[in-house]
Image (cartoon, rainbow, N blue to C red; front, side, top):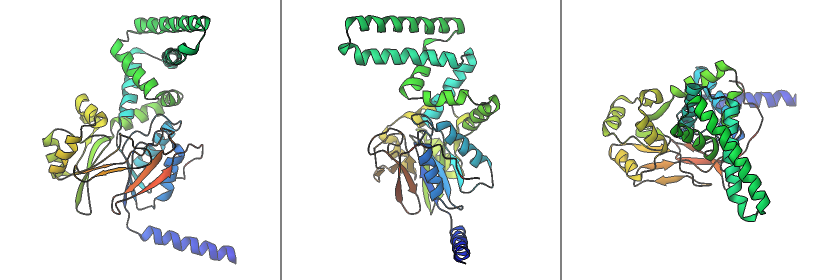
Length: 330
């Protein structure tokens, strides 16, 4: 009898939640923390709408799993809560690297060789002052051998230095190695589906919530006042595939504070991520800015994932964690 009563109580709770009007929630910069992402999903009710402002990839080891789950939820019209994904600079760098790989026929072994060379160089710089001379010479020899392998690959496959710099910046310094090898292990059709999804994703999106105009973007609002004016009128955003490289690079990577103020003058409050402040978000009323990157994925003692509710103007801080647990069914 007790279990039957509990079942009725649980059903009543679910019915109450389903009747509640949905709210708009926003997160940014999950950076591979699959467990933190699942914790966000569990906190939302079926009528809520979650906006993810990019950088779900890299640093943590669950970026591809997060992206796959987002894609399935976004493409399934019956999925609850609703999810809308916007591009981040890490997704842009991932696409750029994949494009270079396809253009020149680079494979998993090539990526491993590039990463090996960069790791050797970094280790040498960190340790050379404490190493015996014999060990120094061994490291130099290994670096030379690794450099020879990479240079040979660049020559044979006609990879220029600018393209190699793009790969290295993402693969090594932005910790893309946690993403690329998971991606390369996927079936070809799934690889294509991920790239198509990212290419069609928004870079910037206007939303009117409770009479206020917000602009959702990973890093920066557009500098072009005509774009702001058009979004104000139409309520439509811009997708990655519809923008040129310069526009994408600015909105996904820059940090110029005056652009937020320009956007504020046009009537928008910008909600973004990109620039981390461990354990807290930034609210700048003067410049019309709410920045949600609380350091998730940086493995700082204070690092958190910030879940912001627009209607309540409140934030919940979620612990940074990785897990192999699977998400609930769509």
